[in-house]
Length: 499
Image (cartoon, rainbow, N blue to C red; front, side, top):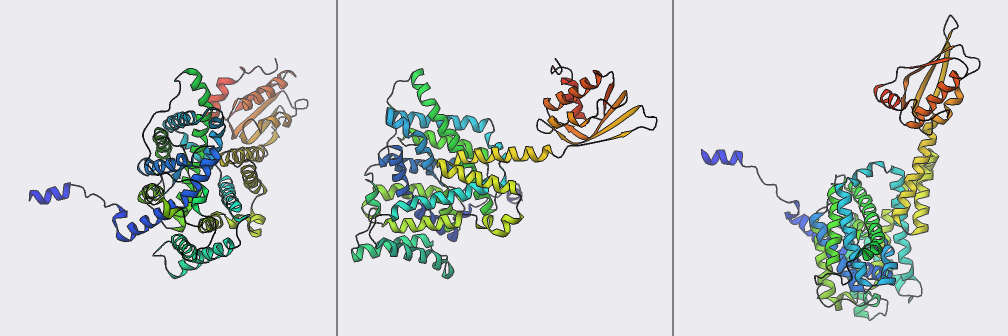
């Protein structure tokens, strides 16, 4: 009897989904494909930041492994990124690697602090049109990053890329047991090695490490001068990293139709950067390209793929560096082209969609794309997109305020009825909608269908009362809802209107 009761009382532990043989195979193969794609990217970003390729490769390892444990979005890949490389490049050039590492550690700490302060909640203020612009700009940048690998190369590179593209397009129609990108990479590598084709390889991108990353502390003076020097770069690392990571997490949420913990992802990114800094890495954030390879191309859905991507990366570059070095860049270029094409939201630029879409939504999307492409910074593009959306929204809402009036039967009182939302943009036009000279001695402003949002609106109502008072007429404002009455009673007569 006791055993039965204990079985009922004791909750059953849910079995991790990745323990399923099918899921496990998918996650392992996805992690391997991502690891292969990470190698040239990490090397390129290291060069962009002005550091040794090992710094970017080690950063990709520690970021992926740490975020797999601490992050809030399963299957999302975090590693060394171009956005972070652009932020820290001037610091490396002027002061060296130790200052970079210190800035990464401080940036991670700032990310943890921002997570505690609830920065993830700001994601709700990013409109869909900005998200579409973010995705489209990202797809264009991913594709553009492959162009240098197709310029000034042997002509055999082009048929190799075509073969890899054909494999990745055609194989999923036959079977999805093995990720098509992995098959393309293996086939092209075997062909080029066996035939002896001389084409650019991963090894040509830079030297691969031959040892494990070591824990250490940056060697620099721990003074306020040092803090003031690295603080701006650390803040840039924190803000750019969080913005790209949270946007990518939201994108993966939409693709997988699941919800992720954005607050956990925020402090998880911070912890990952702190760990990465102490292991001598250049820092990083979520990588949209590799995440799309993991989630869309390979079908991964759990933390295991992210963890294994980091582990495989380290094993590949340290233990199997000679094998990885002979992988033709044509295979990885083809993988990224497929990622770019599948990432772009083609529906958003279809003529039928553009015809139906309000012009303001299209302007916001184009502003996000144009800014991102001009700056090569997704965070700047998102900020400009959000600001553009705010301006368009404010202009749109400002026109929705309407004022109507009637004269009471005895002709002694004019009753105005205000409809709409009163805030800084809409309240500026409110003052001009009253007939101060010809109205009778008593004026009533009915606010039943209006809402007062800010001090500008209260100041506008004060200005109306002042104009009537200057003509010896009285104004009564009635039917304010509770929040509007609260702000009006607090600020009315206190804003210096007419002085």
